[in-house]
Image 1 (cartoon, rainbow, N blue to C red):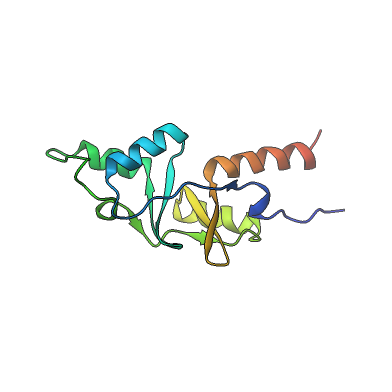
Image 2 (cartoon, rainbow, N blue to C red; image 1 turned 90 degrees about the horizontal axis):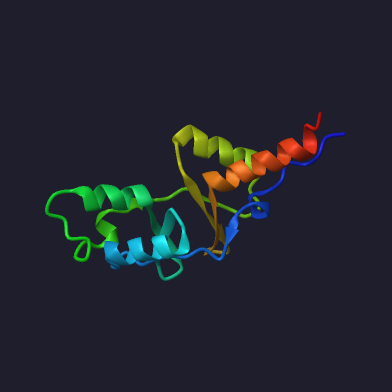
Length: 136
């Protein structure tokens, strides 16, 4: 008997932190370091307008002459992040993330950011699925 494929809701990080596009890189860097996160949705009001990753920050901060306290997130963020419903089947989300080399998906419900699903969450799901479905 086969089990239903779980949804993103089961493994996503709930209550994600977000940042506005006019915030400065130093603010984002501090938030990401303090909260131990690598992906930060960029929102204007309730609308997701971009994604900032720790890699984006490090690349921007490494450029000669860049003062991270004066560079806005909107100048560095990736526009149009990958978004999914909390009810999206995890296999479809993981396949899309792998195929397009996305490190995360922003989980949206009723137009509001309700979670993040990251590569780490995908690995957690994979481990659980292996342990519960493929026991020796």
